Figure 1 (cartoon, rainbow, N blue to C red):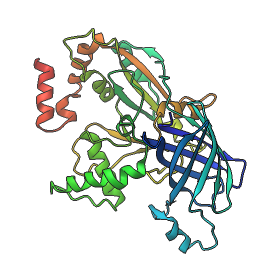
Figure 2: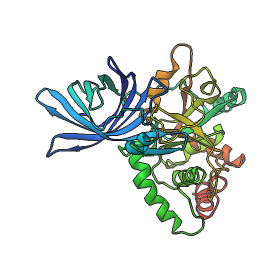
Figure 3: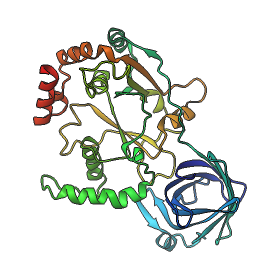
Length: 373
């Protein structure tokens, strides 16, 4: 019941803030859900931190513990242990253990109280944010109408092409994962070790530039990351929407989808959810666009890639929550799949092909396959 991502306020006690809880596993023999939470305090003079959380159902209540706390030190871009942090914040009283009691859950909302061994207490209400709702397209465009819209579009837009209406989720979140601390401390380190064995480039994972460059390579070569690919080109987005489906069977789907993100509006200073920077140490709901270094990645520049980094599982729901009244950051268009051949022929005449977007043998062969078969 608790597996997934939950978000909500902490209040009615000694601290007020916002918490994200990521449950990734359920131990059946113990009836226990295990995950990690991150807490952002409304008081900006206090520390934001991560911790392990374990909850089990006891009778009709959910009770548990939170422990193993690490402070998000964004100045040094590191996770700092509680004991280390207290050595230079001696005036602080940071807990070792938090008890969670009297929890009630209906499957979509979890409410509970907490009490720490540092005399802090309060309650929290978190909502499960993964929903079945998929946004509806603004319009179904013909290929001709889509090109006309491109010619009249506003500036500051980013595009993503998908062969279906699948929700916007990073490959990391599509694998049922939510805990980015676990990902970067374990999985990403293993990836770096194996990539460095190739000896064409050595990634220093303690360096943010190299770390971002490796994320870019991983994203383009099939390793799950907490990023979504976007492009500055609507034509490249259209190519990726159409190309992955067998052109010999136009009846297998009805439409492909082009997502549009209004980065010009999102990045305005008055948007409280816009952050210039964001990474796995961020305890806030984070949706950040990066132009990652194209080190050892010959696909990033031809595809005009822009990466959306997110610690949010349900991106669409979160963006629409942020839109409020009179704002529209995210929308989509559908294009009839029956126009695939017309679109791909047109894109080829523009130079948008496998060969141009995937430099090397794979791109050449796939480009010729599209053209000849």
